[in-house]
Image: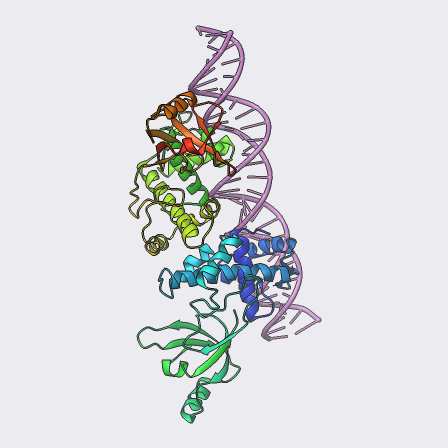
Length: 220
Length: 220
DNA sequence: TTATTAATTTAGGTTTGTCTAAATATATTT
DNA sequence: AAATATATTTAGACAAACCTAAATTAATAA
């Protein structure tokens, strides 16, 4: 019922990887956790023995439903702390993540439920990601403009702000349409432009004006 | 500049032990940390190599001034979190310690300074212990009645509520006078009586009425 | 002051989580 | 389908932080 910081980081990372691809891979996880593939294999065996992942050697892995429950509780802690840091302690948007990364491993359920209450049961963290409730229920997606989504989250284009041909021409040229999967890689303070990546292509920049017209939904 | 959870626990425990006796011992520390003496020796060597303690084999140890600085910063974190838990999250007096024990190891200075600000720079935690400021300055003692001090802290009797002979007779009988070192071991909800221990003796009970007349000062 | 007891340290293991290098399985090309 | 490339796993080490049992030092009592 209680997991080490390291185990928790693995579980959380697998959860996020699974949002993209249904099944996570050793190398993929190694990249995310900045660890060597051999270390991933070691830990996966352990998580398997604890019945937190389905895992067949060489075949990738997926969280079990127990594993998902654990992941959601870690994500709940993380996002509540992010909300606290931003809302109460007035941290800037981009400073909250690293601190929350530490705080999330303090696992007292009472602490987290009381924090939730204190914060007024917020539904989204400062990045717009939904916060699981104490039962692990989470709002699957939300729809926001491309200019508002967090970095490095896969999002799917689901709506366009208007139907002017000028807009559609530009989108066509950039190869973005409804259903396109993309990720925001970087934001540039100078002109609010953002760098996006679609499919396997090299990331490219789009203007703030365009970003505000593109609406996406994205997972947790 | 950054220490493991384990190192921090050692440093903090040594600091507290030193409040009582000027120099801490292997067995004393082992008792506090619920570890074996051999483990203490191992860690002490490490802390010595990091210049956090003065340590001669078989001769006990004391924090260096650097070690004290580190200890005060850990205590600052601990007490600020205790205050937060009690004041903001409405935890009961006796529930805050264990959770703060985990939170204190999240070492972002910015987090702690912003938390301090958010809380309005409180000077004492819910147990009445003083909270070090961001420079590590701490109010050395405070004077309160015996009925208010935390459990298991050595306190020194420094004042008596009144001079009635009935009171003094009782105190004399119990062997408590100005300068007596004592510790509260337990509180009984039924009649608010408390169990105190002085010197090497077996702990004994005193009434709430008496406790309220005895004023003590105690360290951090 | 020597003998006994108590405290402390040393020596050698264990577990957790990491690593490198080598081996093996799977996927991709030709 | 074989050859090559890539992904994954295994084998064997290592550091941190703990442990037990044995040895050593210091403190206490006879």
